[in-house]
Image (cartoon, rainbow, N blue to C red; front, side, top):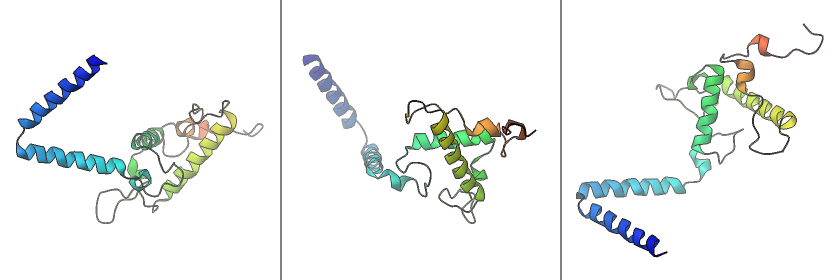
Length: 156
């Protein structure tokens, strides 16, 4: 315990020395960055992402980006495929539902989740591996690849 206390004191003294030698402008910038970080960390997550209808409202930024990157890779598309641009700009309007592809993506995401939960989630875990993904049928194409879609028995 004494070593831990000693280390804390050493860190405190080091930080104090560094701060003392900083310019006033740098101190103000660091204070501002710290305040912005603190405020953004306190914001409710549902305010962070708008119009989430299928994904959890409390999804982390990392989780959301991982899912979106998976869509991009699995369908061989970029964000513009599902997300409309803001009027008069090149910026994407992520909450907008103007493009029908976005609603199709929601339905497909719900479908694959239902298939995985019903047929492949043997432990009923939230973290069960996904046996069926977008790539299963899309294979890097915007539309499902015809020969990857299973046919009903006797229908060839």
